[in-house]
Length: 144
Image (cartoon, rainbow, N blue to C red; front, side):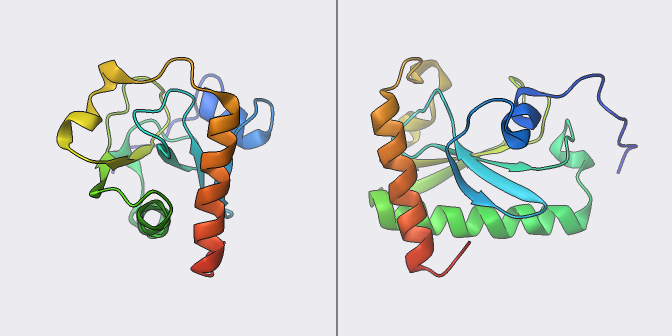
């Protein structure tokens, strides 16, 4: 693990987490949050993010990675229940925001994981509905 330098400024994700920018949260605990992306590849596309701003996923300590993984599993299961895709794809790309995050995407095929096909102007009402579907599935699973 490399040193965890203090970032020069908060990332857009840190600003969402702090409430400075809006976010459609489906998971929140002291260490990990999950919220819908504003440029979804598919309905339900969710980002799982550590609360602490860490740029690269390989710099996340093992204990926090286990917390991130547990949240990914729960949210992934909720996505399966809420959207009934063939699979839930998981991607760590990390080039667009300097804050570790995992994309969880309900998919029908691998072509659904093409970032060039992201919806740059999704319907806000649809995003709200998608977030609520995930929250309902998590509640039914008795997850936070």
